[in-house]
Length: 194
Image (cartoon, rainbow, N blue to C red; front, side, top):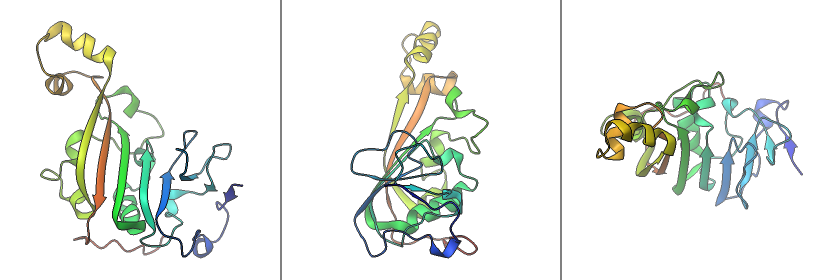
């Protein structure tokens, strides 16, 4: 049975106290993987807990072993702070998978999205902020077949990576697999948040 946390006082929202090795889906929407505990703000989804994740992840520190976050990070009000929340609840050896629409995809531009992500944002040699919280193990690029077909009309022999840089709607989404770092170089406290 799902639990609605949307209207509970901030300090009482921690759930699953004392549990470790959790498998969670943040912003699960309608597609929660089997065996995962789902968090979402929309009732009518298969979420186990209804809450506004922009107020914090309602879990204790260091309790998540597997985290799945598909097409939610672009909806957060403060994605850098949300990364610190993700880091806070992850165990040191947690496996984290983040799916996001790529900046050059039509899917990226929705009135509900607050941030747009090019692939460089997850390449730690370019952006220190992600390295503060997570180490990238793999970045998978999901290509849009229709976008590739159009681009190939102009550059038939170019690699997909080059087409993605030159043409719109070639890269559909990014799938980033990472693990939390042991420490952060920024303050990751939850001052003022749940």
